[in-house]
Length: 185
Image (cartoon, rainbow, N blue to C red; front, side, top):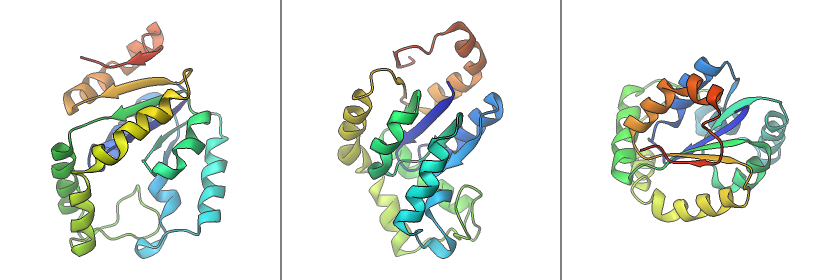
């Protein structure tokens, strides 16, 4: 594993997992949100974002967390592994609420610019979207990933599987267990 995409519903723990994985593997960490957002939740110009993303994709090693569905076809040809946090919507719903309240009034390190976490109409809409994320995205994600049979797909369905995966990351990489499509029990 040298180029790893971590995808999944908002609030599934992509940022937490990617940070721990980067620490344990020594791979550089790239947050899509940091490339996309500028100060005060203003999106970067599309061309600038694509240019920044392309520069990261061309690097020899990375862990990249984030969904941004429209960029998945651009990212998949570069990765060797996709870790899909395919959690139930209700888990992501509560994960998003927890994240907003833990970071309320602050800008998270994984965001670009100064994007202060707040709880308002826009954030409530975002929180509610976690409940329909799988219905809108799951089939698309699996279809797109399926177009790249050489990419190892690791599907984690709950936080216990994530913890187990992270605990065993050094062992499984050395033994070659992560070849092919994997769904831990």
